[in-house]
Image (tube, rainbow, N blue to C red):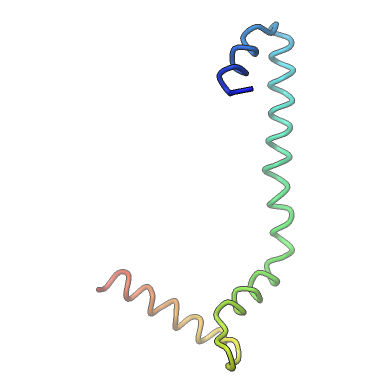
Length: 82
């Protein structure tokens, strides 16, 4: 069913049925929006470690916080001052 067909079907529903459908869609969206946020909050440390791993060069240790700060500063200099 295409979106256009679905919209036509919705128009044929009664007011009570459309309100019920709206409630169902709202609850579904709230669940989907809340779910990713709940997963990302406790995993910040894991994300940081993964990002450090992305910056790691073969045969070298992962960059330190100071080195990452320097990389970020260099990138901002390149972006805004050149």
